[in-house]
Amino acid sequence: ALTKPAEAGLAPANHSHINSPRSWFRLRRVGGVNVGGGYRWMDKAVTGFARKSVVINQGTAFETTVIVPDYDNPRVSPSRGDVDMWVGYRRKILRDRVDMSIQLNVKNTFAGNGLTPIEYNTAGEAVTFILGPVRTWTLGTTFRF
Figure 1 (tube, rainbow, N blue to C red):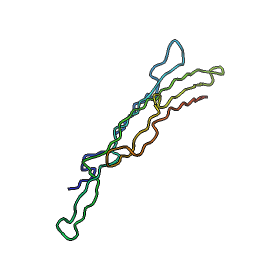
Figure 2 (cartoon, rainbow, N blue to C red; figure 1 turned 30 degrees about the horizontal axis):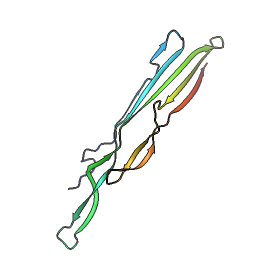
Figure 3 (cartoon, rainbow, N blue to C red; figure 1 turned 60 degrees about the vertical axis):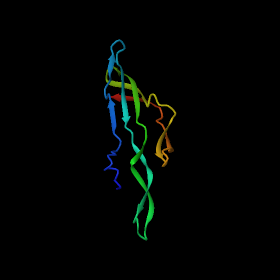
């Protein structure tokens, strides 16, 4: 019998994000400096299924063999985790009337140059890839009056 993906227990990928919206700590010896970070994780995901032959209308004049997805044989992508980090500095300027902060963010801090498979053929070989996460640097400044 053919089963649907949901009946085969194939759930969508799980995602988790751990983030420090505030600083992990403030360095007391260097007033106004703060450091923080976050971790993003994505579970394995079903990216395709093997194929199998099924005979329909067996024993009749309309007997036909069709190729259908084999939901008992899923193809899955690997799980992955990404780290983000930041360092910032905050101080009062202009006779303590303006609060200035500057922050350097590094997204995908430990990113490599690898490829991530997103589709597999019926033999289980990866056939379509996307570029892995790219490390990005962002420098921002905020002034509060």
